[in-house]
Length: 286
Length: 331
Image (cartoon, rainbow over all chains, first blue to last red; front, side, top):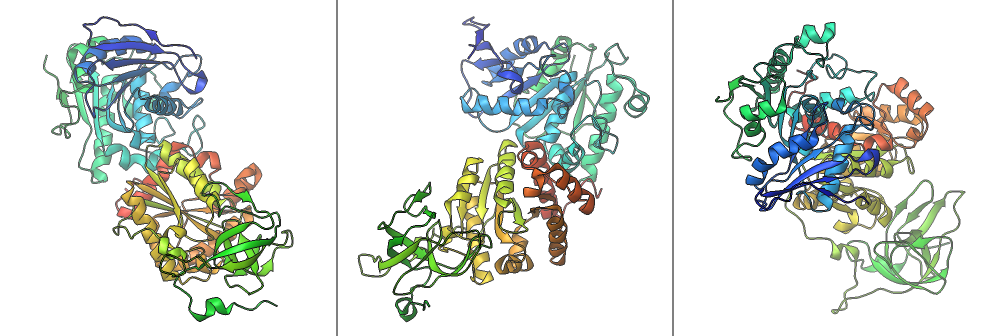
């Protein structure tokens, strides 16, 4: 079996960062940042990259804060060869199953604690993360999703725009999502987007249906999705509501967003605290 | 002609009596009674300890848990004694056993299985209980139950695998354990060697005990298999009675499309509308399509039940039904 590739050996770093090779198409490679002083009972954090697939960069950016909280951080790498459409989670090679396999493997070998993880995703990673959590609500305790290009809405449009039947997903995926809506919303969900991420770019998916329902850009789409999910939570009489945080001064750039407060949303100071005060839209302090 | 033994008729202890036996002829039957985990062959002359009980197995034997002085039959590989009332034409004659005596305890009291029942747990249940019923023996119930356990465990749900009716045996429990069940047990845990001809309230009582044990083991979900087919007397009574109320949602396993359709009609008479169809019919894509087209039901193969995404969806449906809370479909 290929060995881990150690990346960080700085004694002052507070964590060890390694790249663990994948195990075929069923289990992707993964960056693992292990704190040198792990906190007992701290939930692992899994972070999903966007289509630039910079899992290592995301892991390195968030690892110091995760280590300061004694938390293990993992960042799987969904390669373009093996998981070309990983964002959709239920399509093609089932990137959702690949992440489950990875989590089970890491828990079995003791690299992470067993049980639910906190999950975060940026851009394409946010697409994956919210669909994954919707399909597997018992595996995710807290969800942070930032700057998704487009979203799955709780309505009958074909998947992945909604939870209606679609050719691009298993025939019953729509039923999975429909049944799980309550369980999905019954957890802390934090949505974020850069204040300047307010114009479509070359990677923004566009179609008449998507633009009409979700809006032309990521800022509008994040607002509309949050509103739709809050309305669904209200219909289902759930006490929790997803929150939206608009990050000041940044566009579609993970590192800029992290500097503007996304890192604190993903890794709040009290990671296991009860849900924050409800707000349909918040702004992080500059 | 066999006659019921007076040894039992005079003063039977409560519960299935246990007996020492010597095998007088060994057929292809095996027994798990000497080993808690794997069936082993029985040879002529072997000494066996087994329990008396009735057997209902349409593909094998129907038998009564009574004995004759000259011996009796091994009705099930799990270690069940009695005499055969009818036998499937495909099945070889059973292993014959000659009685040596009854095992007794230090005070000289004859042993019986119910003395080894687990102490009663607190009256609790896992949050979600999913039942698996079928069109008959070998319809694929255990496969469906084990696959669903697998899917739920992969979905992050601590799950129990329970068998509420049938004949005590290790194979089904091993299948549940292999699928990842945190707790696997059948009615034998509550002192019953078999549930055939056992009054319905006693069967429900045993299921309550199993659900209590599962909850005490920290299981959030339980998959409960009901043995044999919908027309089997105890299964029919269970589905029509208070036992069914313990179950939040049902999977129906059928051998073919027509038995799927017929079974749905039988279940509908008791007010049960299964969440999904499964079973042997799902080995045939054509039969799956037939069943789906004829019934409009969700037909789930073993692999789909073992997939954590649909398994989690089934769990969500059960929770919504149990809590009576609005689901998105209703919203």
